[in-house]
Image 1 (cartoon, rainbow, N blue to C red):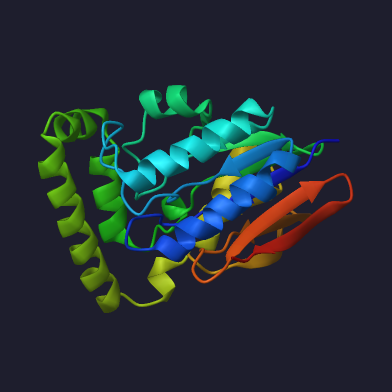
Image 2 (cartoon, one colour):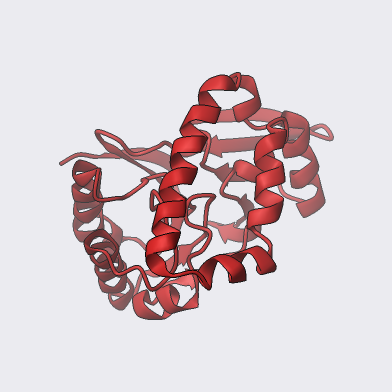
Length: 241
């Protein structure tokens, strides 16, 4: 059975060349040996539109395209940093855009995949922003602006987000367990994989008396982290320069 790999929260940008180098190493050496690669959001620090042809964006696209041409199925689920990513990116790279949330078969088990911010329902400010920014009307209006204006807006948003997060308690920036159970129950699954929170862990619990599991992917900083799943189960691998 083909191996599936899961990554998220790389926050790739020109200001993080070491992380970009880790991604390049992973895509050259590890990703081509998998059957499927799931990229679960915030791969980019900010994506302001498919017309942003920065050096980092071009590098990332090239590596995804090369992996896809080697027969690896690549799925990209947008996060709150790269939700303006669209069809032109998918066409250039050969990846498939995956809806958030999505249920996929991972080695014979239906598994719910989300980026993760939709589960942080205690953070009401973010949920209000998310409802607005993810709307078709808002995205159309944003993408209609000149590229330089969009880049400036993204910089302002990042600065405001960092300042706002410093004022929030750690608890509201994590997922709400009741929301987790509700979403998993609605989707009739007992396994969930997500990123966003930067709190890597494996959480075991129960839903209606049945064992359930939530796996949280890690942020990439000085090293990368990959969730690997095959017929023998799952394990984590570290990507180093």
